[in-house]
Image 1 (cartoon, rainbow, N blue to C red):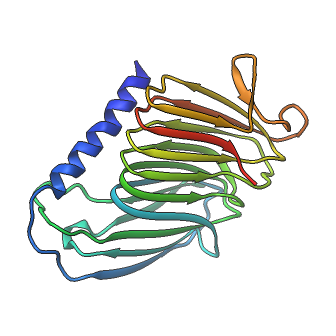
Image 2 (image 1 turned 120 degrees about the vertical axis):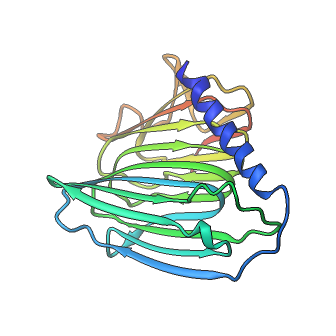
Length: 238
């Protein structure tokens, strides 16, 4: 039941974005906004990132908890950024406002998000239409959840990881490429995928897919991929 609910959620986001862009006014003036969020005294952070339509780039390497650059040309789509710390646990939200009253013919909406590498991060990303590049190598992930939409998404998890963590991907109606590490153990479970699924560089073992480092390394990425009606490639990267 949960798989189909997640799939329906992704489809609904796609329909909503289509309604936003279907009829047209002229676009507004391009706005640029920078936001820096400091870690403060948080021992760990849960970060929730939601973009319904646009172009997003997510990487590590920031000196603060978050260094963000936003470009947009619809005033009411100014990104919402909120951060609180409670008992040593941080909660960061970066969201695109839902504004169904806005109708435009041409949209410019771009996010560049850089996270710190030294903060334990429970990262949850919800995507709609658009192009999304998530290059997460080097970050200190404790958990990762990605809900795909109708766009084109690259999820790069290559490289070395100092600790094990779980990855949950809920499929959408677009194209997605999940790139996995070669020298860190990986175990992938993939189910309920109604579209095109391609597995590259992994072998079947006990009902799942594993890489050559699985069972040999101290670190394991447990990847659970469910649902989707688009094109999905899961592969061992360089």
